[in-house]
Length: 183
Image (cartoon, rainbow, N blue to C red; front, side, top):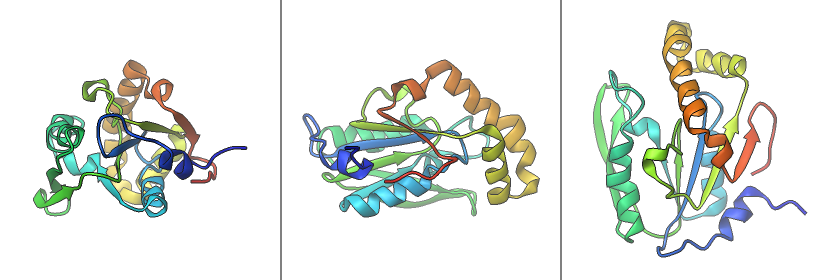
């Protein structure tokens, strides 16, 4: 019998700390936010942290060092994490967010399984999705004016990350997000 993703995560007993740490990685517009939010509802005491909150204009990728020092490292020592979210609409740093000890932390976003972060994850999910569908979803979400950003910047950056670090091969679970799946 196949175990649902939420049930598999509930069974995890983190080693040496109180917080279960899950990552959902995948290409841009592969649909990472939806399973993160669905899992959070099913798991109960869960905090979702998005790598987009650590990105900013004119910065390649996102500030993974800040995620590590402000969120992951404290939780490994059973201390709460705290970070300041970047607000894309106002183009500036926004409110501080708290990440409590215990329960589950879900980190979702492009390149969240990057080698530079080490292996903090108790469970890692990779969302795979064809490039044409990702581009279509991205344009629908962000508008036609962002097509060149998607095609000329983000997709090549994501391809370079996947080719170099192979997060799909490190994941505990690989999902095809172009088709329905159960949480």
